[in-house]
Amino acid sequence: MRTARSASTQKSVRKGIRVLALAAVAGVAGVSGALTFTTSTPSARPASVPSKPTVPPKPTAADARQSTAGPVATTVPAPALHETVDLFGDSLGYQAEPYLDMFFADTGRFTVSNNTFGGTATCDWFGKMAAAAVQRPSAVVLVFSGNAFTPCMDGVALRSPEYYELYTTDTEQAIGIFRAVGAHVFLVGTPIDQDSVAGWDRLDDIYRQLAQASPETVTYVDAAAAVESPGGTFTWRLPCMRIEPSCSADGTNIVRSPDGIHFCPDGTPATRGLTGPCDEYSPGAFRFALAIVSAVTRYRDLPPAVLVHVAQ
Image (cartoon, rainbow, N blue to C red; front, side, top):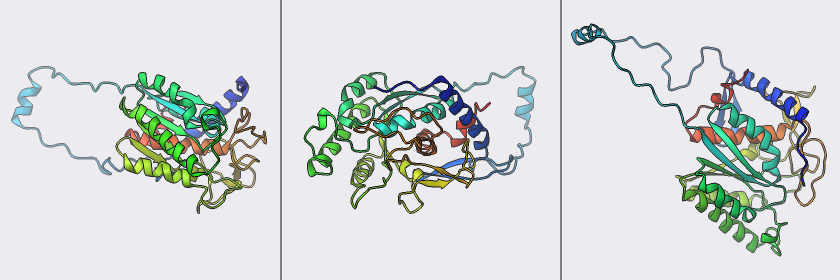
């Protein structure tokens, strides 16, 4: 069973995220599931805001009459509703959890309900998914990389026709559970790993196809691109992003675990997909989570910069 993260670890990571948030005011934009980071000046504004102030029209006689008639009632917009994001996933989702929690919390609008465990498959979570759907979440994030360790996948060979058929039908079932209550489902792609062979991304293709078939209720998130080389190939390190809370002396950060699959750089091996807690800053999990949050906030019509509104 997983041990809890130490309080000191959570505090240090949270402090780092606050540093990130202050820097991120400069601008964060999500592009096709990957992330680009741009430098902005204090006068920068979203494209929807005019670059020059507009000149108000000259007052009319009617305006003058109204100004002498006393106070005019105004309508105050209702505050935005607080929304729930349900996260279901395996070890990749588990390692991204602390960053997802803090990024979503910093929006001031989302609360995350975490349901992750290493080595699990989509079919392990149907019961909890049905229970979660009763609470009518706004969004659901599914992070499943294709494990086949648990009883619901017993006897199914990796990458066999049966394996892909089960993951297709199981993902469709998960989508159906949440579609019935009006939630939007985000299917998260899996990063290439060190030992990937030709056809390794077939499961990602299935997720893409499911999203393309139901764009009104399903979105594919290529969060994997955030921890891969620009050409989509495997890499151990990537150049530091300006908004990261720490950076190695050579200007790069380790984005993958020593096993070439996970994110935590601490070297703790996984057993049947199960990893322990990561007690240090994980640049890979940070980037992976930021790509997911960017996709969700973009779909919900929230600018990525909203991630930093409580940075203090």
